[in-house]
Length: 112
Image 1 (cartoon, rainbow, N blue to C red):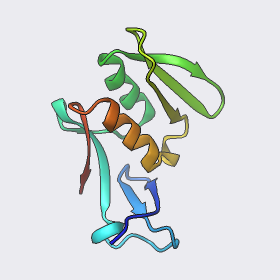
Image 2 (image 1 turned 45 degrees about the vertical axis):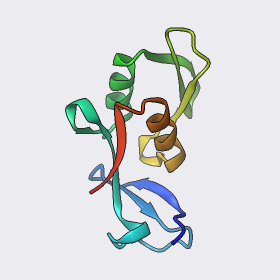
Image 3 (image 1 turned 90 degrees about the horizontal axis):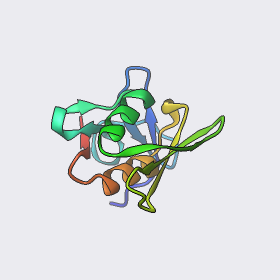
Image 4 (image 1 turned 90 degrees about the vertical axis):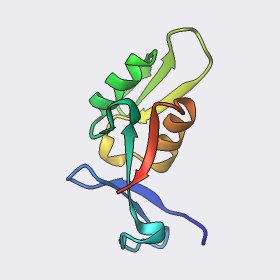
């Protein structure tokens, strides 16, 4: 089965994948609940501030910001950038994927 849709944070800070067809998640298969977890502390990321704090400890710092986005880059001068929406409730699968790929041993998306 192909996965598709958008990641949506609910008010209780649980992220869930909503299907591309707009249906609500069922908790099974594609619609299961997901969370971005900082592995060393087993801490689910519940806010931009918490995520930025954890990324900062890994060498990421603010590079650019405007009203909608915050971009982070590595202090060591690498070319990698991570772009995050300032409104963490609009966090999407592309943002989570970007964080996991660029911090493979520190973050993971997990089923709840």
